[in-house]
Length: 115
Length: 116
Image (tube, rainbow over all chains, first blue to last red; front, side):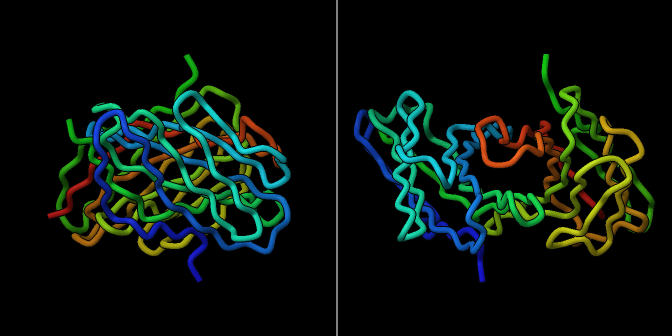
């Protein structure tokens, strides 16, 4: 089974609007972390936001927030007030701290912000 | 400046010619890993290392070797490259501490490898 599933290969959003990028995960490890990364066309991987499995509140970092629904095993990224510079590939990732400490990445969602 | 450095950034080689992609980090991270990125497949882990002299296979280890003789370096070796290893490769490092902020992966700039 896939550890991380991103079902939206491509998304479009109007500038200044909010957008949600979906991510579901699969683990039986009670201790894990969820991460989102941005990959612009230049290719580098930029860390955006982290959510721990024991964190009570949803993580926020500026215009980025993580909608963490533990029972549904989902960790959606919400970008508010989209900007043209948000156009990029976005990857969801999980790290299982109790079993091997590996990272697992999804297949990514390509976001295009329309002026 | 905290960073992960990969070299080379771009490489074109011929089938069967051994090559090494170097990776070095200056953050004293225990954990290092290699990924390949292919369109539609996301990042797939090749090998990872929890510390010096400790390496393990990831999801796609065939055709690759690694070594971790020093904490800062984690080279990726292709003994006999084939065209299906044409890809974008990333090295990453992170702390091993469990369950807290600061355990994100720090990525190198990537190496675009073409095998003809």
